[in-house]
Image (cartoon, rainbow, N blue to C red; front, side, top):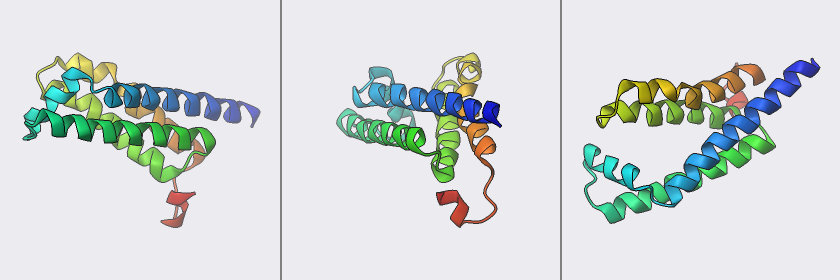
Length: 127
């Protein structure tokens, strides 16, 4: 049992670190990321910068939540968001290996979600 608790903490710290890192880059308005918005119809760089800032704030907030308590719905969001942010790279013209390299971005939150237990009810998603 002690090993599972250690594994949980390793995953909580890893997931938080990944999302804090991405959140800070987003809040700084990482130039490449702002450019990617145009691929999805958002050509106004100012709007893209504002959206990216909000995404960065959300990433950091969710990272902090996971450090304090691994809330399942937040972990599920991190799985989807980590998968999307990895997948976006080949969608904007980067090599598929940039996607493969980032599998841990969604794999770590998924592993943590499975370790804390897949919820059996809607209510459990929020605990």
